[in-house]
Amino acid sequence: MTRSARPYADGAATARQFDGLDVETPVAGFYRMALRSGAAPVGIRIWFGPPLDPVTGEEMDRGHRWQAAANGEPIDLDRVWPRCARETIDGREYRFLTERAAWARENAPSSPHANPTRRIDPMTAPPPF
Image (cartoon, rainbow, N blue to C red; front, side, top):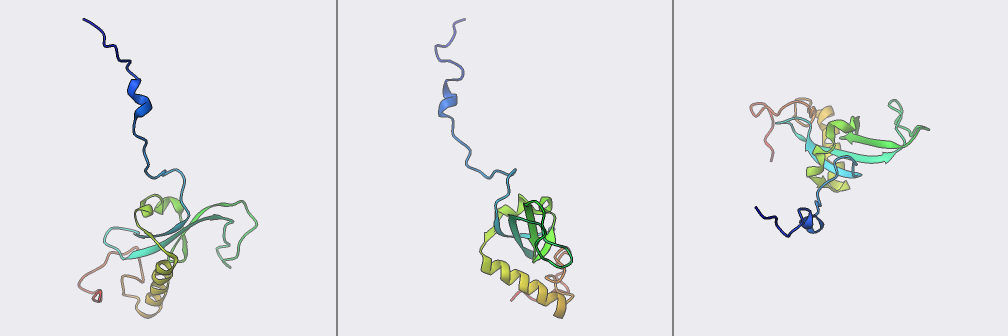
């Protein structure tokens, strides 16, 4: 049996680099996702900064950390990242989703947008148009 003249690791230097998403490090921005299958989409905001006081909403004097909010309400970052990175949106779309959810909680509590953790029931949900 003869050996090949080509070294085994010869092609490693020309291997294609992976240009995908690094799931270990969150990316600050705005995203849209459903908190469960069949639910209405919510706006997700991810940022790095000081934590917010859960009662007053003011910035606390603590170490900076990655944080997330779903429709303006704090949510665990591990619950949404990296799944939310599929669909990025801009700040206007995030504000629209947040305001629609706030309106639905006050004026249409049976709407799918009022409770984003509940599945949409096509028999009771209003038409999407």
